[in-house]
Image (tube, rainbow, N blue to C red; front, side, top):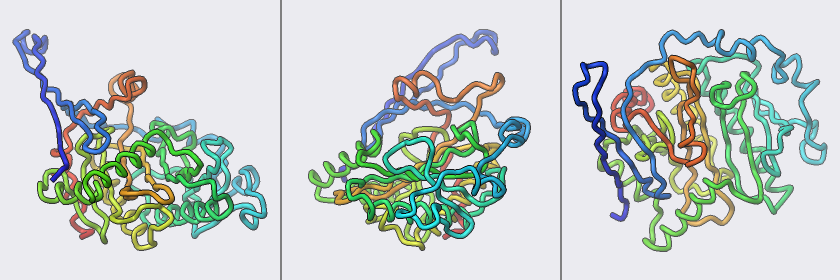
Length: 343
């Protein structure tokens, strides 16, 4: 099997002032992503974000003006041209898609998830998430039909201001363009190179190996596979794989439903662990890709006690080196019970 899970352990000695300056040994693991070969640094810090008053933390966003609430949305949000979407906005169930004022790419849509303004993580409804994902996919299909030069797609979620969300009202970002992001480009290139070298999909081999080991594999839900990422990009990093699906344009409604139900289980774990905010990216692939499978990754975002420090520092921002405070194997053991009911 060509999949390699490479890691190295470094040992750090210090004299601990909390224990009479006795010598203590700390362990740091450096792990290499089995596809991209990017490194992550892992060590264990045990804390729980207890007693966080979300309404106080996000008071400005909760009490301030919200363009996504139903009394404002039709009046203040942009519209698509009529020749792109009749009526200017695309609607699926309780969700609405309109153009983003911030041009993250050639086609950038905001997907508003329902009418409720502030929704704690544990109250995000899988059915509503699914409607939002269907709306994003419908937007992508319209984009691909209208502009053949666009071929790269992703769905992105910054949940609450601690994750980069400028508005607390739940919403997704559907992004499409002629050029992939750095991460998507790397995933596509490495997936293609692996297929050419080994004659198989990297993602198929990864699943075979992870299921055989069982250390990080969480569950299969209607054909989708959930696992804690070996070289995490952030705390609570979970990878969700859509087997044999090379573009988000090809994802079925049943797969979106399974994905949404799995996210519901994952969000319950996060909430029960005292966590409240996250980033999510669904890497949608491209046209005529080779060896790539659609997949998603999540990562927790939070402020760090006691000073309310950002969890992104110089190593992540300027060295693109994730620093993660927990090991995925331990998280996997804690997460698995939350997926039992979905099997």
